[in-house]
Length: 407
Image (cartoon, rainbow, N blue to C red; front, side):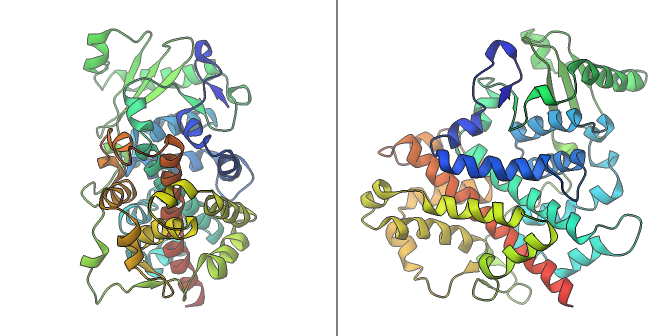
C-alpha cells in the first residue's frame, strides 16, 4: 500500500488500518478486492471503479467515492464520466436500478430486473459481466457500512487521513503528469460555458494550491489540487451519481406481503447455490468470497461473548442472523429469541444503523457503544456487519439470476 502524499508515505490507509486489528481477515479481504479490481475479469478496469463509485454514492460515502475517482482516472477512465450518470454509456447507467435496490431493499430484486439487463441489444450485459458487477456493488455497499461504522468517513471529512490506493501502488499507475493534463483538458473544454470557482470553504481557508474546479452540468463536481507533495482528485457533490435519492431502507416487516416472501436459506444458500453460480460465471471469485466469509466466522470473540453470557459461536451467529433478518432472510433452525437475549438494545441499534443506513451513523456511535469493549472488538462487530450484509445482497441477486437462467 502506498499513500498518495509523499510527505506522509508509510501511513496506512484508514480502512486497512482498522481491518489490521484482525490480520487474517485483512489478508483475505485484500486478496478478494485485488481480484475484483485488478485481475482478469469480464468488466473493463475503468468500469469496475465507476461501479464502485455508483455503489458508494448510494450511501453518500465520500471516502470511497473519492478513492475510486482517483483510481478510475489512473486506469484510463474517461474524465467526462465523473460528471455523473448522465455522462456514462447507457449500458453502465442501466445498472443503476439494481444498484439502488440492492443498497436499500434487496428483497425487491427479481428475475425481471436481470432479464432487462440481459436482453439482446447493443447495451445488453452478459451473465459473466453482470455477476462481476453484482459482486462489486454488494462489496462496496457493505464496505461503505464498514467505513461509516468505524469512523473512517468522518476522519476523511475532517482531513485527518490521506488518499492511498488499496493494494495497487502508485508506481504501477498512470503518471501524475498525464493525469494533470487530462483534468486540465476537461477544464478547458468547459471553461467557456460553466462557472469555474473553488468551493467556498476552500477559498476561505486558502488551504489548497493550484486547484481547478470542474462543475459539471447536473450538479456534480470534480476538484483537482496539487496540495501537499502529491495530487488529490476529489468530488464536490455526489448527487450526480445518485438517481431517486429518496429511495432508502424500509423495514422488511412492513413490506407488501403479496409481493415479497421470506427468503429461506434452506431453499437458497451461499454454500449450496450462490458459491457455485459465482464461480461458474466469474472464475475463482467464489473461492475468494467463500474464504472471506469463513475467515470472519473464524475470528475469535470469546471476550465479547463472555460478557454477554454466551459462547463465541452463539454470539457471532446472533449478530449475523439479526442482520440477515433485517433483510428478510431467515434460518429455520435458529431460535430468534436468542437475538434479544444476547444482543443488548444499544448494540442492536448500532448494528441496524450501520447496516441499513450507514450514512446516518453518528460519528460518536463507534466510541460510545460498548465502552467496556476493546477497539479491536468493535472492529470485529463491524466486520461481521460487512460480511453479513454483503452475503445478504449476493443471495438475493444470485437467486434472481438463477431464476432467470432456469425460466
